[in-house]
Length: 173
Image (tube, rainbow, N blue to C red):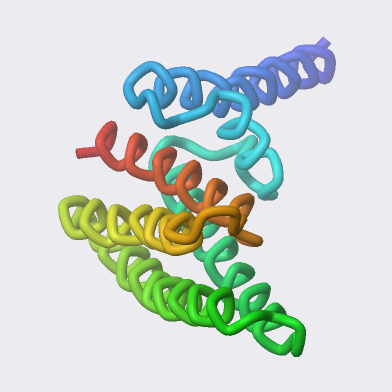
């Protein structure tokens, strides 16, 4: 009987903890119109450990996800810049994006440090600057009619991940 009780307790604890991601994402989406619930849940589900995380740990995971995204964005832009067929205008925009994403990598690292120290106002500033990186990058391509950004998905993911992090940071503040 004790073993059965322990198994039931373990299963119910797992279900409650797993629902915490969904509950947190619902609250984020309710509090911040820039947070997409489905994107939030799938982003956290992509990270091991999110199912057993509390709000503070989800905040740390969100910063990790942003860092991973901006680092991957830097690599993607560098790969695009190595292609010879990129026209000069597009190359200039890609270089601009590379610059803002390299700065974003630094901002995320500084934000993680501030987060560990509980300095949420500083984290908010750093994450907000990363959010702007995706917008700046995307806007550069919109300046020329008919030119589409090869980074739209990356920029959108950066925006969405930062919106999630900012929402969690606001809950913790």
